[in-house]
Image (cartoon, rainbow, N blue to C red; front, side, top):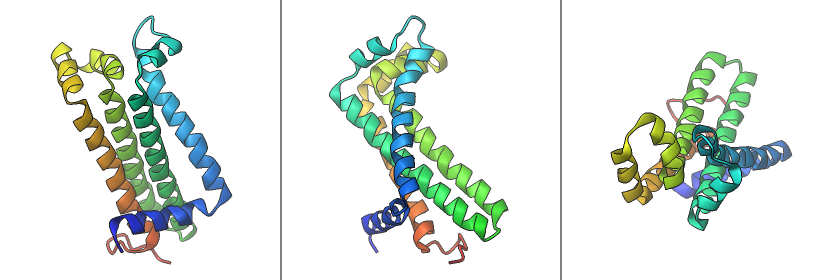
Length: 172
């Protein structure tokens, strides 16, 4: 199977359950809110309305795309965790699932840094003005890299869901 067929097949399996569909919507909304709220919280005097006014339509599309893909990654991991928990393979599952979810959230943080108003909040704590200028100049590269990270996480998790992962030892 090709890259996209594996991902689509795994997503169809996950979204066949009504609870996963609702969870996808809820998680996506929470993650978009998180990506927008972090600069509001980290920058003194910043308000939610002002922060929204700083974003371009591209930023909103980027946040929605990343929140949906990160939510899918989290739900794929939850699906694997619940399936393997039923099979009493808890010790391996917790470590593997935690790494997958962490990588998705890390990619989300990297992408929210790609919007310049967000970068000021993040990099004001961790970096310097030079870092902000670099991020603003190469913003599209950071966004592309973050989305690729999440898509790779979804792909490898989809391999596990579909039973194609030979090293995962998922018992059907």
